[in-house]
Length: 361
Ligand code: AVI
View 1 (cartoon, rainbow, N blue to C red):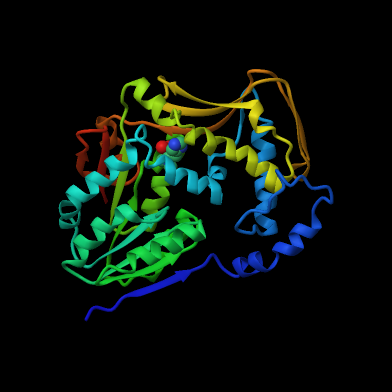
View 2: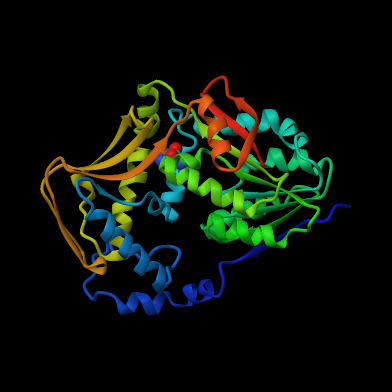
């Protein structure tokens, strides 16, 4: 009978402190509360996290000529739930294309690698799509799966789900991508090859230069013979792309606006959400969708815990996310520039999206 293992490696002691300190943190903040906006986050945040959030918000909102907010802050509990909803929107074909390719080509992907193979996934989310790869591998060997995820709820769901697969042992890492990957790389045996999954075109949320830098860092943690499966959303017509990021149901708008609500909740900000409009723009020169929040009227913004006051003019926008799109011909070059070789590529027939198998040179 096959055994199953599920464990979690947390980011360290901080998490225990993080949970224990909620009430202390809440009582240490402002005495005037607005119940509509000053809700505690479902997952308590440690003080170091809040200081970093405040510093990031301050630096990015004061950027000129274009104010920004870092897209990583879109993903609190509510933001992650809204992103899950985005993934099933009829207009957002990306996730289904990603999953279709994995389902169809899991065998080809694992057959390209020598056993034994362990699997690490950067930003696993609930890990649903990864099942195909794990099942294909488990047909030939006991498989270790290391989901790396900063959202504890997504990690728990992933561990529960993937821990059900026979001959698959799951060890979750509640860490950032590179910290998690370094931890996985140091724990594996010398004969094990590593397959790193970076799915869903998350690479597209990096600027192109930063994306290359990130892939180089990934490569540094790997050995010759290891592999990276990289999902990339491909350029398609502008109307389709804009609709995918500005759906008529308003789910993506809610996902975007939640960033302002989060600043209100966690940093005491006074953003009035109804005074902002979500906008998706296609930037043809950079081949990317940009999400913006546009002020409908003059806004005097005060964010006490970031020690920040700014004025937004009517029509002025805050740039919240970039989602770069690719053409298949540029992927080989991307692999070479970052220390890999692209040995295979599969493209979805319904929604232009590619899975690219990179081998560490
Ligand atoms: C996570 N990432 C790949 C998504 C994307 O398509 O860029 C995030 C997203 N933003 C709006 N919709 C989806």
